[in-house]
Amino acid sequence: MADFSKAIALILMVVLVANLALMADADDDKEIRVRTHKGKKECIQGWECSWWSRYCCNQTISDVLAVYQFENLFSKRNSPIAHAVGFWDYRSFILAAAMYEPLGFGTTGGKLMQMKEVAAFLAHVGAKTSCGDGVITGGPLAWGLCFNKEMSPMQDYCDDFYKYMYPCAPGASYYGRGALPIYWNYNYGAAGDGIKVDLLHHPEYLEQNATIAFQAAIWRWMTPIKKYQPSAHDIFVGNWKPTKNDTLAKRGPTFGTTMNVLYGEYTCGQGDINPMNTIISHYLYYLDLLGIEREQAGPNEELSCAEQEAFNPASSPKTATSS
Ligand SMILES: *[C@@H]1O[C@H](CO)[C@@H](O)[C@H](O)[C@H]1NC(C)=O
Ligand SMILES: *[C@@H]1O[C@H](CO)[C@@H](O)[C@H](O)[C@H]1NC(C)=O
Ligand SMILES: *[C@@H]1O[C@H](CO)[C@@H](O)[C@H](O)[C@H]1NC(C)=O
Image 1 (cartoon, protein in one colour):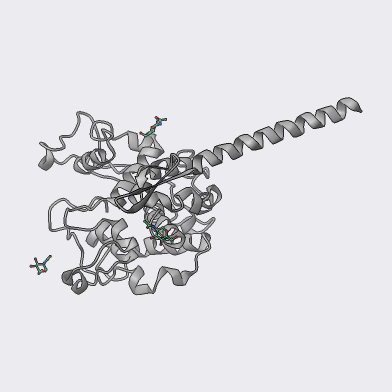
Image 2 (cartoon, protein in one colour; image 1 turned 60 degrees about the horizontal axis):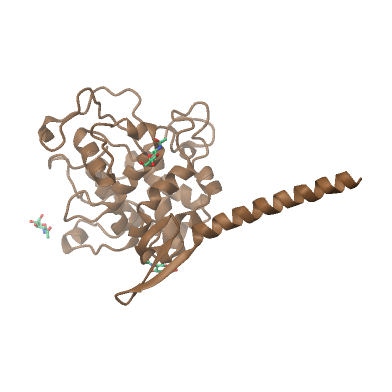
């Protein structure tokens, strides 16, 4: 009997110590350091928001998107018929996001806007990596992150036009890879410069390392495709003020316009086409799963880009990153 209660006491102690360790870990992560710099409040928040920034004073992405929520959004990605089983995970997403949280990714504007931006970004990702067309179980929207690469590339996507800036590496093939799939040597080159990983010589990193794959996708979301254009992030969180031309082209600070800046006329200005609708559906589905009311997504005109003029028409050379 005495031994028994000793054992219980021991177990209790182990549990207690383990809990304390966990709590200490969480505290370390969430420790917020605050300073005032040139009259503005700036913070650092553990490894997830790790340099002085006003955005780091807000909650971080792991505060507004928990593991179980990520699992819900991408519930079929590890099913036996998925094409990147075991590849994508929450941890890689948060690690990748940490590079951009001090710049405002998922940390702008308060909890609702933060959740909406994460949902919007992941909706692009989910739609572009889905294998949900025609599957029976779970519905077509449950299959985001099913792919991490193009399955049967018909070519190497090497374009000589960029041979001085981004020459194709011998033997490398620049078929679609990643979370917002990247195609062509010049897009691999630019994304690689952006995240400081040599993707031009190692395009395979995008299908071998989920953190790098998410980093490249968040870089695309955070970075204007052309200098005078807004990033998808700036459009979505309202940092961007449309010009008169934009207003005439029906481009406002909306979810619809994020599709326009990323995919141009492959998706926008073509009426109610499937490539556009599937991205919108993913966004609404993710908002539902995150418990955000549909009204918070705005009216259909703001979700859609059916009537917008494209930022980057395909007739202008080499701008759209993916189809
Ligand atoms: C941080 O969140 C608050 C609301 O909680 C918001 O008003 C503020 O704009 C956010 N800070 C930044 C830098 O976006
Ligand atoms: C994946 O990439 C990240 C970021 O470059 C790196 O820190 C990590 O070590 C890589 N993981 C593996 C398994 O190579
Ligand atoms: C606005 O659109 C007109 C006509 O397409 C174009 O010539 C002009 O350069 C545009 N202005 C800006 C600031 O983009």
